[in-house]
Amino acid sequence: MTDQQKKLVEANLTVGFVAKRSGVKVSALHFYETKGLIRSWRNNGNQRRYKPDVLRRVAVIKAAQAMGITLEEIKQTLATLPDKRTPTKEDWSALSKNWQAQLDERIAFMQRLRDRVDGCIGCGCLSMTKCPIYNKDDYLGDTQSGAVLLNNSQE
Amino acid sequence: MTDQQKKLVEANLTVGFVAKRSGVKVSALHFYETKGLIRSWRNNGNQRRYKPDVLRRVAVIKAAQAMGITLEEIKQTLATLPDKRTPTKEDWSALSKNWQAQLDERIAFMQRLRDRVDGCIGCGCLSMTKCPIYNKDDYLGDTQSGAVLLNNSQE
DNA sequence: GGTTGACCTCAATCATACTTGAGGTTTTAT
DNA sequence: ATAAAACCTCAAGTATGATTGAGGTCAACC
Image (cartoon, rainbow over all chains, first blue to last red; front, side):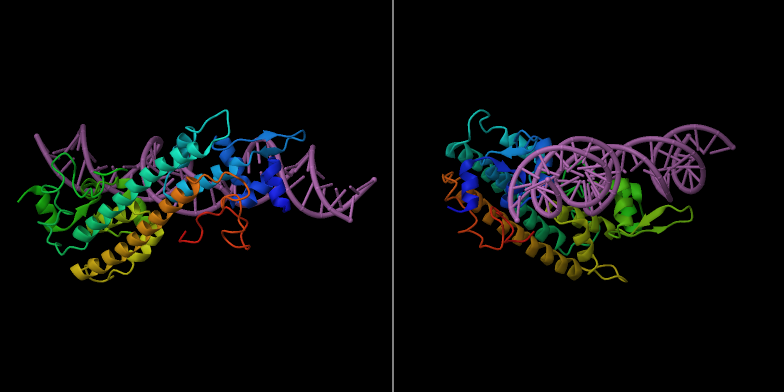
Protein backbone atom coordinates (compact mmCIF):
# COMPACT_ATOMS: atom_id res chain seq x y z
CA MET A 1 0.00 0.00 0.00
CA THR A 2 1.33 3.41 -0.94
CA ASP A 3 1.49 6.28 1.51
CA GLN A 4 -1.39 7.98 -0.26
CA GLN A 5 -3.58 4.93 -0.02
CA LYS A 6 -2.71 4.59 3.65
CA LYS A 7 -3.76 8.20 4.13
CA LEU A 8 -7.04 7.55 2.36
CA VAL A 9 -7.89 4.51 4.42
CA GLU A 10 -6.97 6.22 7.65
CA ALA A 11 -9.53 8.81 6.58
CA ASN A 12 -8.26 12.00 8.17
CA LEU A 13 -7.33 14.02 5.17
CA THR A 14 -5.40 17.25 5.49
CA VAL A 15 -6.32 20.25 3.40
CA GLY A 16 -3.09 20.00 1.43
CA PHE A 17 -3.72 16.39 0.56
CA VAL A 18 -7.27 17.09 -0.53
CA ALA A 19 -6.08 20.03 -2.59
CA LYS A 20 -3.53 17.92 -4.45
CA ARG A 21 -5.86 15.02 -4.94
CA SER A 22 -8.82 17.04 -6.11
CA GLY A 23 -6.86 19.48 -8.20
CA VAL A 24 -8.17 22.63 -6.52
CA LYS A 25 -6.16 25.03 -4.39
CA VAL A 26 -6.22 25.11 -0.64
CA SER A 27 -7.77 28.55 -0.84
CA ALA A 28 -10.62 27.13 -2.91
CA LEU A 29 -11.27 24.46 -0.29
CA HIS A 30 -11.42 27.13 2.39
CA PHE A 31 -13.74 29.08 0.16
CA TYR A 32 -16.05 26.12 -0.47
CA GLU A 33 -16.19 25.55 3.25
CA THR A 34 -17.25 29.12 4.00
CA LYS A 35 -19.92 28.69 1.35
CA GLY A 36 -21.18 25.50 2.93
CA LEU A 37 -20.28 23.17 0.07
CA ILE A 38 -17.88 21.00 2.02
CA ARG A 39 -17.17 20.36 5.68
CA SER A 40 -14.25 19.64 7.94
CA TRP A 41 -13.48 19.29 11.58
CA ARG A 42 -10.42 20.54 13.40
CA ASN A 43 -7.59 18.68 15.10
CA ASN A 44 -6.00 19.85 18.35
CA GLY A 45 -3.86 22.37 16.54
CA ASN A 46 -6.88 23.94 14.77
CA GLN A 47 -6.04 22.43 11.42
CA ARG A 48 -8.75 21.14 9.09
CA ARG A 49 -9.33 17.44 8.67
CA TYR A 50 -11.58 15.88 6.04
CA LYS A 51 -13.40 12.65 5.48
CA PRO A 52 -12.43 10.98 2.20
CA ASP A 53 -15.83 11.60 0.65
CA VAL A 54 -14.88 15.25 0.38
CA LEU A 55 -12.92 14.20 -2.72
CA ARG A 56 -16.08 13.00 -4.37
CA ARG A 57 -17.85 16.17 -3.35
CA VAL A 58 -15.16 18.30 -4.90
CA ALA A 59 -15.20 16.21 -8.07
CA VAL A 60 -18.94 16.73 -8.25
CA ILE A 61 -18.56 20.44 -7.65
CA LYS A 62 -16.09 20.72 -10.50
CA ALA A 63 -18.17 18.64 -12.86
CA ALA A 64 -21.25 20.69 -12.10
CA GLN A 65 -19.36 23.92 -12.59
CA ALA A 66 -18.18 22.70 -15.96
CA MET A 67 -21.84 22.26 -16.82
CA GLY A 68 -22.40 25.88 -16.02
CA ILE A 69 -24.10 25.37 -12.71
CA THR A 70 -23.42 27.99 -10.04
CA LEU A 71 -22.00 27.19 -6.64
CA GLU A 72 -25.26 28.21 -5.08
CA GLU A 73 -27.19 25.67 -7.15
CA ILE A 74 -24.56 23.04 -6.48
CA LYS A 75 -24.89 23.72 -2.79
CA GLN A 76 -28.64 23.20 -3.03
CA THR A 77 -28.21 19.86 -4.73
CA LEU A 78 -25.44 18.70 -2.42
CA ALA A 79 -27.75 19.54 0.45
CA THR A 80 -29.94 16.62 -0.63
CA LEU A 81 -27.18 14.25 0.43
CA PRO A 82 -27.60 12.69 3.86
CA ASP A 83 -26.34 14.82 6.69
CA LYS A 84 -25.55 12.27 9.33
CA ARG A 85 -24.11 9.31 7.51
CA THR A 86 -21.58 9.00 4.72
CA PRO A 87 -23.37 9.10 1.37
CA THR A 88 -23.87 5.71 -0.25
CA LYS A 89 -23.74 4.63 -3.82
CA GLU A 90 -27.47 5.26 -4.08
CA ASP A 91 -27.15 8.79 -2.72
CA TRP A 92 -24.55 9.72 -5.29
CA SER A 93 -26.50 7.96 -7.97
CA ALA A 94 -29.58 10.04 -7.31
CA LEU A 95 -27.50 13.16 -7.43
CA SER A 96 -25.93 12.04 -10.66
CA LYS A 97 -29.35 11.65 -12.21
CA ASN A 98 -30.17 15.15 -11.15
CA TRP A 99 -27.06 16.50 -12.89
CA GLN A 100 -27.79 14.40 -15.93
CA ALA A 101 -31.23 15.86 -16.29
CA GLN A 102 -29.83 19.37 -16.00
CA LEU A 103 -27.14 18.58 -18.49
CA ASP A 104 -29.65 17.17 -20.92
CA GLU A 105 -31.61 20.36 -20.61
CA ARG A 106 -28.55 22.45 -21.24
CA ILE A 107 -27.56 20.40 -24.22
CA ALA A 108 -31.04 20.73 -25.64
CA PHE A 109 -30.92 24.46 -25.00
CA MET A 110 -27.61 24.70 -26.81
CA GLN A 111 -28.97 22.74 -29.73
CA ARG A 112 -32.01 24.98 -30.00
CA LEU A 113 -29.67 27.90 -29.80
CA ARG A 114 -27.48 26.54 -32.56
CA ASP A 115 -30.48 26.05 -34.79
CA ARG A 116 -31.66 29.53 -34.02
CA VAL A 117 -28.26 30.98 -34.72
CA ASP A 118 -28.18 29.12 -37.96
CA GLY A 119 -31.66 30.14 -38.99
CA CYS A 120 -31.60 33.71 -37.85
CA ILE A 121 -28.17 35.17 -37.54
CA GLY A 122 -26.96 33.34 -40.59
CA CYS A 123 -29.97 34.29 -42.63
CA GLY A 124 -29.87 36.77 -45.44
CA CYS A 125 -32.65 39.01 -44.22
CA LEU A 126 -30.76 42.19 -43.57
CA SER A 127 -33.68 43.99 -45.08
CA MET A 128 -34.75 45.84 -41.95
CA THR A 129 -38.41 45.41 -42.59
CA LYS A 130 -38.52 41.62 -42.68
CA CYS A 131 -35.85 40.10 -40.43
CA PRO A 132 -37.14 38.95 -37.06
CA ILE A 133 -34.03 40.39 -35.50
CA TYR A 134 -35.11 43.84 -36.56
CA ASN A 135 -38.82 43.24 -36.41
CA LYS A 136 -40.45 42.02 -33.32
CA ASP A 137 -43.96 41.87 -34.71
CA ASP A 138 -43.90 38.46 -36.35
CA TYR A 139 -41.59 36.94 -33.80
CA LEU A 140 -42.21 37.43 -30.14
CA GLY A 141 -45.57 39.06 -29.92
CA ASP A 142 -46.17 42.57 -28.73
CA THR A 143 -45.40 42.23 -25.06
CA GLN A 144 -41.68 42.42 -25.59
CA SER A 145 -39.72 45.08 -27.34
CA GLY A 146 -38.16 42.97 -30.02
CA ALA A 147 -34.97 41.17 -30.91
CA VAL A 148 -34.89 39.26 -27.68
CA LEU A 149 -33.52 36.13 -29.13
CA LEU A 150 -33.20 33.80 -26.22
CA ASN A 151 -35.52 34.46 -23.37
CA ASN A 152 -38.12 31.88 -24.15
CA SER A 153 -35.92 29.07 -22.86
CA GLN A 154 -34.24 28.79 -19.53
CA GLU A 155 -32.04 31.67 -18.35
CA MET B 1 -44.89 52.25 -42.16
CA THR B 2 -44.78 52.42 -38.39
CA ASP B 3 -42.70 54.96 -36.51
CA GLN B 4 -40.27 52.27 -35.51
CA GLN B 5 -39.81 51.12 -39.07
CA LYS B 6 -39.26 54.69 -40.12
CA LYS B 7 -36.61 55.01 -37.44
CA LEU B 8 -34.93 51.87 -38.67
CA VAL B 9 -34.85 52.95 -42.26
CA GLU B 10 -33.60 56.40 -41.38
CA ALA B 11 -30.76 54.57 -39.69
CA ASN B 12 -29.76 56.87 -36.87
CA LEU B 13 -30.70 54.86 -33.85
CA THR B 14 -30.63 56.37 -30.39
CA VAL B 15 -29.28 54.42 -27.48
CA GLY B 16 -32.71 54.18 -25.91
CA PHE B 17 -34.21 52.73 -29.04
CA VAL B 18 -31.44 50.18 -29.43
CA ALA B 19 -31.81 49.23 -25.77
CA LYS B 20 -35.52 48.57 -26.14
CA ARG B 21 -35.17 46.77 -29.42
CA SER B 22 -32.30 44.56 -28.35
CA GLY B 23 -33.51 43.87 -24.87
CA VAL B 24 -30.37 45.08 -23.11
CA LYS B 25 -30.07 48.11 -20.87
CA VAL B 26 -28.59 51.39 -21.94
CA SER B 27 -25.81 50.83 -19.43
CA ALA B 28 -24.95 47.55 -21.10
CA LEU B 29 -24.71 49.27 -24.46
CA HIS B 30 -22.34 51.83 -22.98
CA PHE B 31 -20.40 48.97 -21.47
CA TYR B 32 -20.16 47.06 -24.75
CA GLU B 33 -18.94 50.20 -26.40
CA THR B 34 -16.16 50.75 -23.88
CA LYS B 35 -15.17 47.13 -24.47
CA GLY B 36 -15.07 47.65 -28.20
CA LEU B 37 -17.93 45.30 -29.07
CA ILE B 38 -20.13 47.92 -30.66
CA ARG B 39 -19.63 51.41 -32.05
CA SER B 40 -21.47 54.66 -32.28
CA TRP B 41 -20.92 58.18 -33.39
CA ARG B 42 -22.13 61.34 -31.71
CA ASN B 43 -24.61 63.95 -32.83
CA ASN B 44 -24.13 67.67 -32.22
CA GLY B 45 -25.35 67.32 -28.68
CA ASN B 46 -22.86 64.53 -27.84
CA GLN B 47 -25.49 61.83 -27.88
CA ARG B 48 -24.79 58.39 -29.27
CA ARG B 49 -26.19 57.36 -32.61
CA TYR B 50 -26.08 53.84 -34.02
CA LYS B 51 -26.30 52.18 -37.37
CA PRO B 52 -29.08 49.59 -37.52
CA ASP B 53 -26.63 46.71 -37.76
CA VAL B 54 -25.84 47.28 -34.12
CA LEU B 55 -29.05 45.36 -33.41
CA ARG B 56 -27.68 42.33 -35.13
CA ARG B 57 -24.40 42.72 -33.32
CA VAL B 58 -26.15 42.84 -29.97
CA ALA B 59 -28.26 39.81 -30.89
CA VAL B 60 -25.09 37.97 -31.78
CA ILE B 61 -23.44 39.04 -28.53
CA LYS B 62 -26.35 37.72 -26.53
CA ALA B 63 -26.54 34.46 -28.42
CA ALA B 64 -22.83 33.90 -27.98
CA GLN B 65 -23.02 34.68 -24.30
CA ALA B 66 -25.77 32.14 -23.93
CA MET B 67 -23.37 29.62 -25.42
CA GLY B 68 -20.93 30.44 -22.68
CA ILE B 69 -18.57 32.52 -24.76
CA THR B 70 -16.89 35.42 -23.01
CA LEU B 71 -17.15 39.00 -24.20
CA GLU B 72 -13.46 38.95 -24.99
CA GLU B 73 -13.87 35.98 -27.32
CA ILE B 74 -16.96 37.54 -28.85
CA LYS B 75 -15.00 40.69 -29.47
CA GLN B 76 -12.31 38.68 -31.27
CA THR B 77 -14.87 37.06 -33.52
CA LEU B 78 -16.76 40.26 -34.21
CA ALA B 79 -13.43 41.79 -35.16
CA THR B 80 -13.44 39.53 -38.22
CA LEU B 81 -16.36 41.51 -39.61
CA PRO B 82 -15.47 44.18 -42.15
CA ASP B 83 -14.47 47.47 -40.65
CA LYS B 84 -15.29 49.88 -43.40
CA ARG B 85 -18.52 48.63 -44.91
CA THR B 86 -21.71 47.34 -43.41
CA PRO B 87 -21.48 43.56 -42.99
CA THR B 88 -23.25 41.59 -45.69
CA LYS B 89 -25.19 38.39 -45.54
CA GLU B 90 -21.98 36.49 -46.26
CA ASP B 91 -20.10 38.18 -43.46
CA TRP B 92 -22.71 37.24 -40.90
CA SER B 93 -22.96 33.80 -42.37
CA ALA B 94 -19.26 33.14 -41.88
CA LEU B 95 -19.53 34.34 -38.32
CA SER B 96 -22.51 32.12 -37.75
CA LYS B 97 -20.54 29.11 -38.89
CA ASN B 98 -17.84 30.03 -36.45
CA TRP B 99 -20.36 30.10 -33.59
CA GLN B 100 -21.90 26.87 -34.77
CA ALA B 101 -18.60 25.08 -34.66
CA GLN B 102 -17.98 26.36 -31.15
CA LEU B 103 -21.44 25.37 -30.08
CA ASP B 104 -20.99 21.89 -31.51
CA GLU B 105 -17.80 21.59 -29.53
CA ARG B 106 -19.48 22.70 -26.37
CA ILE B 107 -22.36 20.34 -26.88
CA ALA B 108 -19.95 17.50 -27.44
CA PHE B 109 -18.07 18.52 -24.32
CA MET B 110 -21.28 18.52 -22.33
CA GLN B 111 -22.20 15.12 -23.66
CA ARG B 112 -18.81 13.69 -22.73
CA LEU B 113 -19.24 15.27 -19.37
CA ARG B 114 -22.66 13.75 -18.91
CA ASP B 115 -21.33 10.33 -19.78
CA ARG B 116 -18.48 10.82 -17.38
CA VAL B 117 -20.79 11.95 -14.64
CA ASP B 118 -22.91 8.94 -15.28
CA GLY B 119 -20.08 6.48 -15.41
CA CYS B 120 -18.00 7.84 -12.61
CA ILE B 121 -19.89 9.89 -10.11
CA GLY B 122 -22.86 7.59 -10.36
CA CYS B 123 -20.75 4.49 -10.07
CA GLY B 124 -20.65 2.31 -7.04
CA CYS B 125 -16.93 2.39 -6.45
CA LEU B 126 -16.74 4.17 -3.17
CA SER B 127 -14.04 1.74 -2.22
CA MET B 128 -11.20 4.23 -1.95
CA THR B 129 -8.67 1.91 -3.46
CA LYS B 130 -10.36 1.37 -6.82
CA CYS B 131 -12.41 4.38 -7.85
CA PRO B 132 -10.72 6.63 -10.39
CA ILE B 133 -11.97 9.59 -8.45
CA TYR B 134 -9.89 8.56 -5.48
CA ASN B 135 -7.11 6.91 -7.40
CA LYS B 136 -5.26 8.73 -10.05
CA ASP B 137 -3.02 5.87 -11.03
CA ASP B 138 -5.27 4.10 -13.51
CA TYR B 139 -6.91 7.23 -14.77
CA LEU B 140 -4.90 10.22 -15.74
CA GLY B 141 -1.33 9.07 -15.64
CA ASP B 142 1.24 10.14 -13.12
CA THR B 143 1.79 13.71 -14.15
CA GLN B 144 -1.30 14.96 -12.42
CA SER B 145 -2.29 14.59 -8.82
CA GLY B 146 -5.53 12.73 -9.30
CA ALA B 147 -9.24 13.26 -9.39
CA VAL B 148 -8.97 15.93 -12.01
CA LEU B 149 -12.07 14.96 -13.83
CA LEU B 150 -12.32 17.44 -16.62
CA ASN B 151 -9.11 18.94 -17.77
CA ASN B 152 -8.49 16.79 -20.79
CA SER B 153 -11.07 18.64 -22.85
CA GLN B 154 -11.30 22.34 -23.48
CA GLU B 155 -11.34 24.75 -20.55
C1' DG C 1 -39.97 78.99 -23.36
C1' DG C 2 -40.36 75.83 -19.99
C1' DT C 3 -40.85 71.24 -18.31
C1' DT C 4 -40.21 66.46 -18.89
C1' DG C 5 -37.81 62.64 -20.54
C1' DA C 6 -33.76 61.01 -22.61
C1' DC C 7 -29.13 61.49 -22.64
C1' DC C 8 -24.16 62.44 -20.93
C1' DT C 9 -19.79 61.08 -17.77
C1' DC C 10 -17.58 58.97 -14.16
C1' DA C 11 -17.06 56.69 -9.94
C1' DA C 12 -18.86 53.37 -7.07
C1' DT C 13 -21.17 49.16 -6.23
C1' DC C 14 -22.74 44.32 -7.05
C1' DA C 15 -22.36 39.28 -7.84
C1' DT C 16 -19.68 35.22 -8.64
C1' DA C 17 -15.67 32.70 -7.79
C1' DC C 18 -11.77 32.74 -6.25
C1' DT C 19 -6.47 34.16 -5.14
C1' DT C 20 -2.96 36.66 -2.66
C1' DG C 21 -0.60 38.38 1.15
C1' DA C 22 0.42 39.59 5.91
C1' DG C 23 1.22 38.05 10.24
C1' DG C 24 1.24 34.20 13.17
C1' DT C 25 0.90 28.91 14.70
C1' DT C 26 1.49 23.89 14.12
C1' DT C 27 3.51 19.84 12.29
C1' DT C 28 7.15 17.21 10.42
C1' DA C 29 11.67 15.93 9.53
C1' DT C 30 16.45 15.80 10.69
C1' DA D 1 15.88 21.17 19.29
C1' DT D 2 15.36 23.59 15.43
C1' DA D 3 14.26 24.68 10.78
C1' DA D 4 11.24 24.03 6.94
C1' DA D 5 6.85 23.04 5.35
C1' DA D 6 2.20 23.21 6.08
C1' DC D 7 -1.37 25.30 8.25
C1' DC D 8 -4.32 29.20 10.41
C1' DT D 9 -7.30 33.88 9.92
C1' DC D 10 -8.77 37.83 7.85
C1' DA D 11 -8.63 41.59 4.74
C1' DA D 12 -7.81 43.00 0.28
C1' DG D 13 -7.35 42.19 -4.56
C1' DT D 14 -8.61 40.13 -9.30
C1' DA D 15 -11.57 39.18 -13.27
C1' DT D 16 -15.93 39.30 -15.68
C1' DG D 17 -20.07 41.54 -16.70
C1' DA D 18 -22.54 44.50 -15.77
C1' DT D 19 -25.91 48.18 -12.74
C1' DT D 20 -26.67 52.31 -9.97
C1' DG D 21 -26.36 57.01 -8.72
C1' DA D 22 -24.79 61.79 -8.69
C1' DG D 23 -24.53 65.79 -11.05
C1' DG D 24 -25.35 67.93 -15.22
C1' DT D 25 -26.89 68.60 -20.46
C1' DC D 26 -29.94 68.04 -24.47
C1' DA D 27 -34.17 67.43 -27.06
C1' DA D 28 -39.15 67.11 -27.73
C1' DC D 29 -43.55 68.64 -26.93
C1' DC D 30 -47.20 71.87 -25.71
